[in-house]
Every structure is written in C-alpha cells, then in structure tokens.
Length: 145
Image (cartoon, one colour):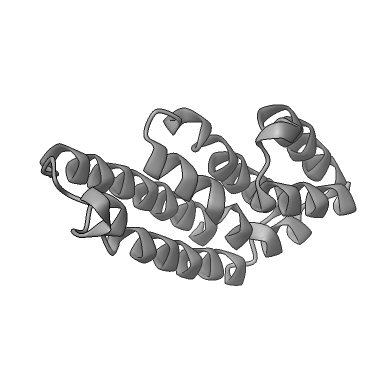
C-alpha cells in the first residue's frame, strides 16, 4: 500500500510543478529574462525543487520495496507525462531530464515489464529525439529485457 501512496504523491508533485510553471508563465512580464539581465520563469527555484523532491520520493518508493507491477506503473507514468506536456517547453524538458532519477528502479522490473516498457519507450522517443537521459533509460531497460 505504501508504494501506491507514493505513486499518488509523485503524481501530485508533477501536477503541482505543472501548475507552478503555468503560473510563472501567466505572471511574467515582457522584460523577464530579457538579454539575461533579469531573471525569468526558467530561473525560478521551483525547477530545482521539483527535481529534488522527486528524487526524494523515488528513494522512498524504492525503500518501500515495490513489486515489478508497481514500478512499471510508476515508470509508465514518468515516461508518458512529458509527451502530454510538449506544448509547455519548460515542463517538457524537465520531465524528460528526470527520467535519469528513476534508473535504479528499472532493475526492480521483471523481464516482461521491462520488455513492455522498452517497446513503448522506443516508440514514444524516436532515435532523433533522444537526449542522454532517454539513451540511458533505454540502455537500462534493454539490459533487463
């Protein structure tokens, strides 16, 4: 039960981050971030805080000794959420980058779940769109399947 609760908390963290970034975009001034002189939405500490909070929740999740099915469910969520937020570039790139925070969880997958995730991830993130985070993720998934 602890694992499911943590998945809900992680999902809520993602939702709160999306809302915060949307708020930053709504309230920014025309001159924010102009010529690097003033700070803009991309400089807000919420980005670092999101990554730090997610890292902590993922550690708690791993410590709860989740089943392969629970890990697969969480990873599916983490791998799909960037695709649903492509229009918001700050959110999209952050969600792509944090895939590396979940690399250790991949080793908790059984072969069938790893294969399923590998196939879906390969399809969702074509070779020409992959960043180092996606390449590492695919490498880890491939090693398990």
